[in-house]
Image (cartoon, rainbow, N blue to C red):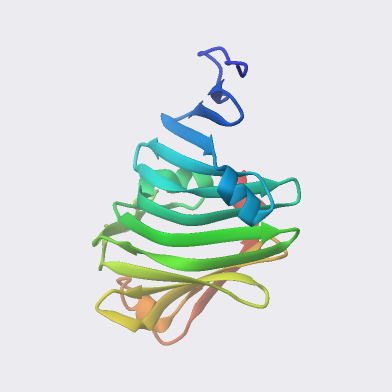
Amino acid sequence: MMHQANPSSQAAMVSGRVVHGAAQVPQGYRVEWRFNGWRSLLALSPTFDVTATGPGADLTGRLSALPDRYALRDAGGTLSWAVVPLLAPDLGITCDLTASVDGLSISQNGRTRRALGGLRTSPGTCARDKGEIAGIPVPALVARLTTTRNGIEAVLAAQNTPDIALATATLTNRDRLILRLHAAGARLVPGMPASSEYKIELPLSALRR
């Protein structure tokens, strides 16, 4: 059996075995895994069928991992904005969107990242955490993830006009996040000029403080 942490600790509480177990993660999330021998042979690395549930999250997928690389394949399920502050606590934006994920694959080998797949969101509203402006209506969106020469890229568009990019996010192989708000996306923000694009670039570590 694995060690089980003190329930009062903020660390994850892990139970079960390496081949089949579960972890209770802070903020009410639970991750379960089961070793998949056949997929491990195909991937040439230990592979597990994984389920993650909790506030705003209900996902399944297959995770292969070695010390210098990992691959999450065939991820599917639902994901709400409640998960975003856990990954990027200083983002400064709050939304009430829920995303549907289907067939998403993300991997990293050394410093090289790859991604394929996409997700769709419900319509909703977004606002700044400090409340300087009222909530901005956001249409139902679609995001397409692809691999580029420099890393992985996600292009965001409205579901009813999927060929018009609203924003683009790039996670480079050098651990930098580049966000671009295109003119079509700027037009959704009241008071923001839509004559040019806006770009923000920062190290990935800045979102993990």
